[in-house]
Length: 416
Image 1 (tube, rainbow, N blue to C red):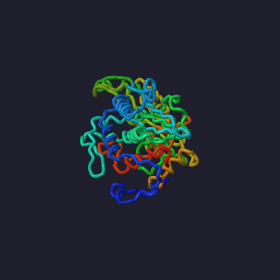
Image 2: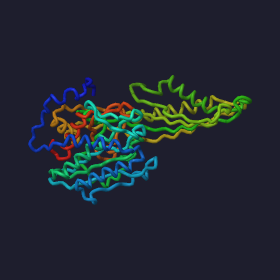
Image 3: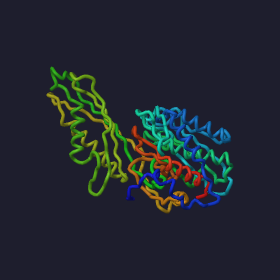
Image 4: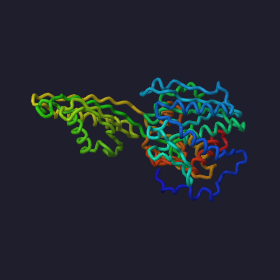
């Protein structure tokens, strides 16, 4: 859905009354406590696979608020993920004080490596990292704090609520691995699911693209680059020729073919050890994305064809050629929720109750909601104020984050 750019609510939030906030039974979060909570979480290092310390901090906060130890569990997702992890997903469940379908609130706790060493500071309505060499880590500690803040408010204030599941996932940033391998049996069969991640507080992401990840190994033939280069087969030349062909044919970058759309990128190349040796091996990592599963496969096939063709074209003086092995793996499948999906309607009501008009969106990025929806738990994603994620200029809009905390508490207490 297209929408006009929206000014930061920092400039107007304090002066604008929050419409729809007059429900006498709707609890309000402690906004300053929420801000302290998110800044504390952002100081804890927790790159993908190294989330142990932040999970322990969440568990301590839950226990201090009165959560029984038996209500807190972790799964073994980290034993199935591509990279070795310290800990699995964290699940906190509460029985309901009212008869209603179980609701699940979720967010991921890992950050990209750039955010390790973050030193959050609040200034002028924004949270920045005072360490200019790091990202902030609001992606997605802001979402993790929305969940934790709602759980703490419910526990300490004994707020009425439906049956609840809170899920903090690991390894989202490296392919949604935590959600992919989450142990569904621990979740209590939620009927309504809400994921908190990047974006504005009025944004509801109801769909997302799917992606394949590719590993391409090019094997050539080594020879002395000065004395006998003609006897070698350069793996670098094969890779360069293939990428060039993909670019010329429109299969690299923003792809439009016969009414279909997708994207691709070669993001990593490594190989070679010396300039005086014809490189005999190069490894590349690439991706292909599209909302259309068949077209996504077609992009992968175009990559394979370009590399195989290049391998046959680069030959030694003796007629020897190189070899290419391409392995692809589904990172996550695309999804699109119907507007009639119950979680979408409930999320829209919660956003309206906070004085905002919900905006549905579809993203070209991946979300934990991809795997949750694919695995039978339709999940809508709500924003919580992060901007410029994965960069050293990342920041968190305080007003938007606090509004997301309000929306999260209303979803958790069914007071939307």
